[in-house]
Length: 593
Ligand code: GDP
Image 1 (cartoon, rainbow, N blue to C red):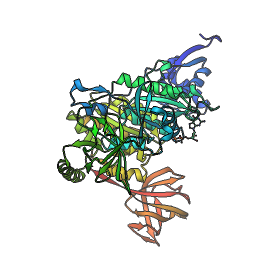
Image 2: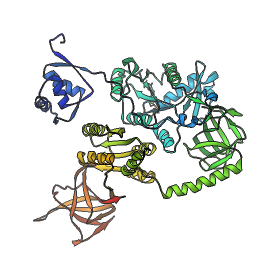
Image 3: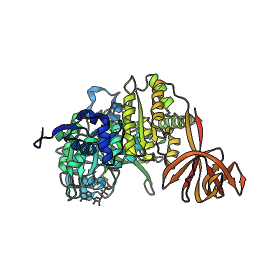
Image 4: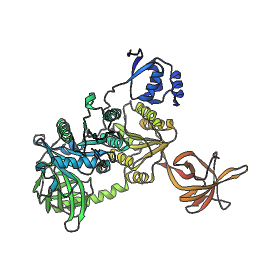
């Protein structure tokens, strides 16, 4: 009982109407009625957030407290951290601890670049930061005698591009979250990317100098996202900082050392030389200049390096301050000259015996590349299932996108329920919004498939998905989506039906024709409209109807298709509410496999 005689209940951050009713000993109907009187229409299985649930509870005579959840640890993704893969063949007796490599992720404008500058300024060994005029994509600082390497290209595009190419520079992610803004879409994406890569996250809660900073609110958000702050007995270190005023930077470095210690990040300085290309470009006077992060072994002047299909003997090697180097051990970023070609960021590099060996390897790689392009593996549900069955995969990884937050929660919980059998379902990322390039990148890097509910993939995302062989499945009915995933888990999936958008038209005016109904007078703005295609009617960017074309006319003639630039009349079956300004998208259904 609380002081005012109300009963106290603990509630999680999200709860279904049914569970909420049960916890209060009320009937679900009572709860639904209170929700309705507060303007929320919900069914018994729908989830409501803590604040909404609290309003209902207080109307029914309860005081609420937020329940501390068990830490939601990221599920096994079946992937082992990249650096462990690199050292897997090394002699265990020769392994030594190496400095951690850290990358900074977070939402735009939350202060990633400022933080990188602040760290560079406060802690570059010997206080030479001011003297560093060039950025080579990575730098090293020292904290209490321990070196830490920072990758200098903030943002998860670089991080994921690396993973998609099979490499991974970072051992630890520092997630910057502005204390006045809290978790934003790119913060969530960053969390998903780090988790998918099984890289631990330290939160730098930035901008604490601002009046609008609200650390408690941000911590609650972090906890809701599964990053429970250590002060709440969770596993995530949250360090309040001000990058702008260079406050608490030492604390952040201390936290990095602490996490690195617990991970025992190792390498063999005497082992095979291998690492990741951080960036590369052509310089007019110097030729190809590339920044390499050594992850195992020791790179030396004169070594022959091969990265992708670029190779060459190292003619000159510099550290991040621009000083000449002869040797570079694990976790050292170096800039080298001497490559024949520009490798791509994220390519793995290795040292080979001589240039002849390098040429042979390059020839082999080029051939392999051609062959693999011809048979690009597809991360379709069917394909994934067959891999699961053959024991290659133990889980089905999904990225879930839905039109609104409200539909996302029931989808995620239903999908999670499905994965309780021998194969688990791992939802790497679930968010409201259209399917974008970032989702496809994450899927490609993690061999996941993307499922969307009432959302579309934008054009760049579709192109990327095609190039990367990522499967995107979209649904308009939740149970179909669940059914499909269930079938995939049971290996009974029908061939995938793909939607292929063939064209789009703007509705310029609407004609009413008696006995026929409304006809949209349109101009085709992209591709073509096909008489036998299906259409989606969009208003202000939202889909308001999906169905079939009932008639297609060009200058009063019935036609089979109308191309871009031409005008036409489109009748949409069972839909009369078309308005000028609407957009009609035409698509066809194709069997895939
Ligand atoms: P990024 O997009 O994440 O790299 O963000 P930036 O580092 O470019 O910072 C975005 C804006 O936030 C800039 O105007 C910075 O000056 C400001 N900013 C960054 N850190 C802080 C901070 O600790 N306090 C305050 N008040 N502003 C900051």
